[in-house]
Length: 262
Image (cartoon, rainbow, N blue to C red; front, side, top):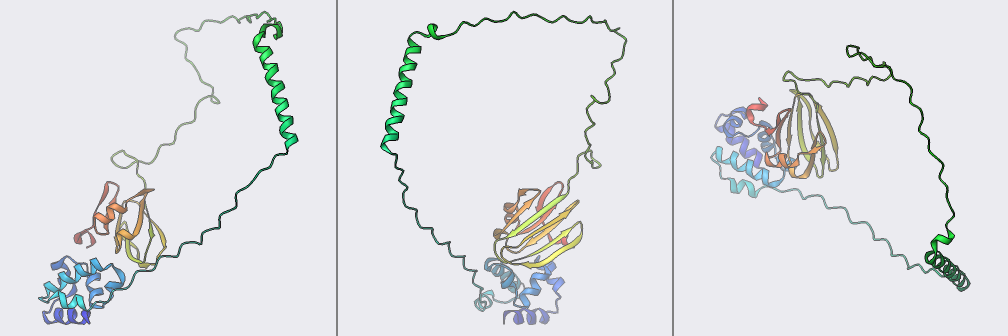
């Protein structure tokens, strides 16, 4: 098996997983999964081939024979489309002929009345007399001294606006809310403010939600097969650009390096 050859080659060089991880910049859990022949179950073939090639060349092994021994798991077949509904027959509306004649007669009578009104409109308009409008008397206004203070009744004063909490720089601080929807089976690990929240395999269709105050660290095996949303805004493109390894803070999103995980 591929994992046995890698493990024996590393033992022959008297190297530990931590030493290999430091030299190759490959995470320890990825090296352990390679030696246990389980990485092809957690990642897509393109990532597995890249990690295996780097590890084999570091151990002075030819990567081609090792890659030839791998068996790749077939992707899940898409669900069959729903059966098409039969088309409904066209609907025919029949109007009785007597009703058509009655409506036509009413329309003709209305047109004749409208023509008479249009020809001589002043004859049909009634005379309208408008009442005389009287302005109300204004009450006497007592002048207010210039040095007098205006007092607003408490019932008319607007309520004070709530002030959001502010950070040390004076800007409002909002929590980091991360949501993930898996479109196929994948592996994820999430740390919130230095605390491990999840390290598991998500099945297809799974949906998870995590929250942090200052910092989120995310590792996802298939970044192109998930939908990531941060505070209601999609960030899947950032995950793909950083190979599924993200550091999310109040200042923005960046790639997660090996030094950040230590």
